[in-house]
Image (cartoon, rainbow, N blue to C red; front, side):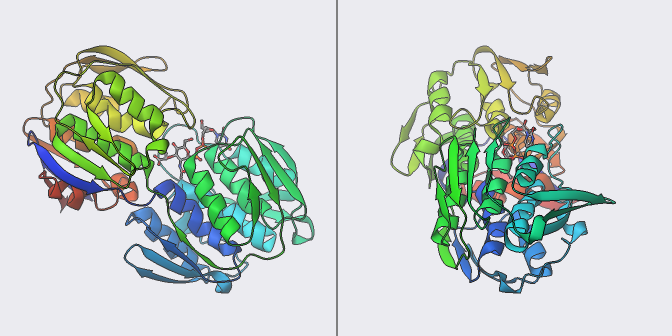
Amino acid sequence: MRKIIINGGRPLTGKVTVSGAKNSVVALIPAIILADGIVTLDGVPAISDVDSLIDIMETMGASVRRDGECLEIDPRGVQDMPMPFGKINSLRASYYFYGSLLGRFGQAIVGLPGGCDLGPRPIDLHLKAFEAMGASMTYEGSNMHLVAGDKQLHGAHIFMDTVSVGATINTMLAAVKAHGRTVIENAAREPEIIDVATLLNNMGARVRGAGTDVIIIEGVEKLHGTRHQVIPDRIEAGTYIALAAAVGQGIQIDNVLYEHLESYIAKLEEMGVRMTVSEDSVFVEKQEQLKAVSIKTSPYPGVATDLQQPLTPLLLKTTGNGRIIDTIYEKRVGHVAELAKMGAQIATRSNYITYQGPNELIGAQVKATDLRAGAAMIIAGLMAQGQTEITNVEFILRGYSNIIEKLTDLGADIQLIED
Ligand code: EPZ
């Protein structure tokens, strides 16, 4: 296993560029199965989730060429076959193959998805949408067999009981080649959904309303190849903005779309964080006194659940006390016990986190309990006096492109070593 060693307390300064969005690209790659031509993606992040998805695509018969951030995929060789079970339980986003295989072949034989342990992560809304579109499911061991009557899905009017990013995107993937019209009500509005809809429409699909809570899809016969630029990763951006406010002496974060982070930036300003927001970058100054605030996550455009963990170490620097309520994943508290090991005054209560600041963190041996908790531990390690050792770092490398290099360029004393 690999681990990250940080010698903290150093002032960081300089520039960092945000990469393409993980939560977009993990849907864009499976979506390419729907095309009858080559699709090229630009701005693909260097993260292990992408490596896993390329491996799955190639195993299923696609040909893939990767040149830095450019990914060229020819899906025409993809076979109508069971998904490679052993490979797909490494990441939750493998469920997007359900929608794209159903959309292309009218059937999908898949294992159940994996991913971070954030508490129960059901897929009932995905399956309910597929059933409404004419798919039935049977279970063979740990494999699930989804098959549409006559191998052809039909349009449906679907109301999502819960706002779900994955179920919204998966339903779009199944619907673009279904017979007739599909309406998704109470759809999620995240920017990644707009990004997937943009790719699909550039492939010839007819998707309207992405980014609102009602999405209408008119099924088409064929989808062709295209070229697509992945949107910037708003969660990576938010992570580096929090890091810059916590340990920076002036850091510029480039490739940031302000409209993707409005509620988050408003919260930072409420804390007293001084920053300059321009068209596609944010400059964060060295911070002085910051005020404790409370955070409540909610679906986009609210403060993202993925950002409450990376934001927590900065909250520990503020003066006062506050609460963090994650309304999407109540159990997303893995970072709390690890931060307490570093001397933080932080604890979990029934369905929220409570903290008191300011705190002087001390380096310790800690672990990444999930992807975004891992990012929080890196920021805490950079803040702390002394050495911090982080294990379970594979989580972090799933979602943060070139994070060791990016932090080293800012002046951090950070290493990734084989244990
Ligand atoms: C996506 O996960 C993101 N992952 C998550 O980011 C993010 O935290 C989440 O959306 C926020 O909503 C990817 O995009 C790959 P959901 P997803 O369906 O789609 C419940 C990260 O750190 N639900 O929007 O799996 C669910 O339990 C990751 O990058 C059902 O009840 O999340 C949750 O409470 C972590 N039934 C709520 O909806 C379902 O069928 C929102 O989940 C599906 C979801």
